[in-house]
Length: 486
Image (tube, rainbow, N blue to C red; front, side, top):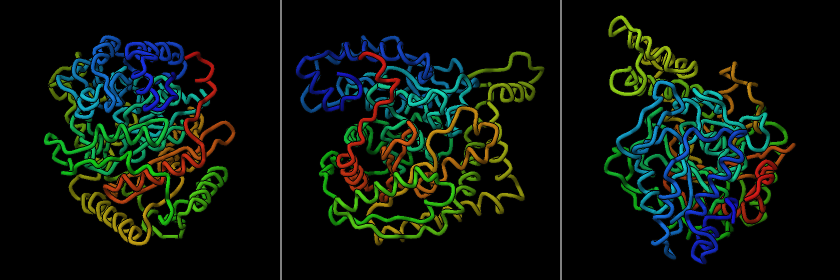
C-alpha cells in the first residue's frame, strides 16, 4: 500500500492486516522525511502520531473507513496542544487550548493527525509564497508554486505524504492549489462544514474542505466533517446525506452549463483545450451541454478584493500582542507595543489587505466601496440562481493557467489576484465547487472546475466522479513522488 491508494483500499488493507495503523503512520513519516526537505509542505509534524495510530488498531471496523488513516491540516485550523500559526510570525508559538470541530470529527472517525501544513499567511495568497516561514514547492516541478493558500495541503497529498488533507477556501484556496498539484479539491457550500476553530480570514467567505486523490475520497472525508455544529453560528442545520451513494457514474440527462465569462483571454490555450476536451467527454457520457451567461462575473474580482480585506481588517484586529502570539518587547508604551507587534508580526501581503479593508470600511468610503461590493455580490449570487434554473452543474477551468514559477508574480499583486478569477465568484455566492484533474500540459496538471447548487454536493460529486472514472485521470503521480520507495 501507498498513499496513492484510495481511502477504501487503505481501509481494506487494514482490515486484512496487510498493514497496521501504526505502520501507515510510520510510512507517512518516512515519506515526509524523504520528500519534505524539497517540497516544504509541513510546518509541524506531530510527535505522537504513531502512538495515536496504535490506539486505533483495536477499533478498526468495517464501516469506519477513516480509522487509522493518516491526514494533515492546514495550519489555520486550531489543534489542542499543537502549535497553530497560520504561517505568520505574529502567532509563532501559539498553542490553542481547543481543537477545531473538523479536527475533532476526524479524530472521532479514527483518522490520525500527522501534522500542520504550510500556507499563505492567514490564507492570504495564491501561491504559498506569502508564508511567514518559507515557500512550498510544487511536487510536479520544484521551481513552480503549488498554488495557495492551501499550497502545503495540496503539495502534501500530491507527493503522497498523506492520503488526504484539509484546506480552507476563501476565494479558491482549495481548488486552485488542487488544480496546480493534480489532486481533487472540494469547496463545500458555505455553512455545510463548521468553521469553529478555523482562524478567520473573511468570515462570510471561508469554508473548510478536503484535498484528496479521488472524488470518492473527497466524498468520504466530507461525510466525516459535514453537519450542524452549535458552536458555529453560520453552520447550516442540515443533515449530511450519504455522499458516496451519489457516485453512480451515470450523468445521463444531467444538464451542464458553460459560461463564456470563464473562458476569457486570460485562460491559456492549453488549459482551454483540456477543459473543452473534458466537456466533450461529459457530453459523450450522456449529459447535455448548453451555453449560459453569468453577466456580473467581470465584477467579482473587484468585489472580492473589497469584501475579503474588509472582513480581514476586522478579524485581524485581535492580533495586538496582548492576549496571545508574539509581543514586541522593546515598546515604550501600549500604543508603541501595538504598532511594533503588528508591523513586525504581519507580512507584506497581510498588511496590504488590512490597509485596503480598513480604507473600504472607513467613514465616508463605506458606501462607495464595501456597500457597493456587497451589492455586486448579490447580483453575482442572482446570476447563479438564474443559471441553475436551466442547468444542474456549471463547468469551467479551475485556474486560467497551470502552475507558474516561484517568484514570477510575487511582486505583482494584481497579476497574482487574477489567478483566482475562475474561483472567486463561487465563494461570493456561497456555492459548492470541486476541482478535478483533466490533463497534464508540459508536465503540469490542469484542473476542471464544477460548480453546483447550494447544498447539492451530491449532484456535484456525481458529475465529478463520472468524469474522473471515464477520463482515468486519478490518481496522478508526479515524478518526484514516484522516485521515493513506499
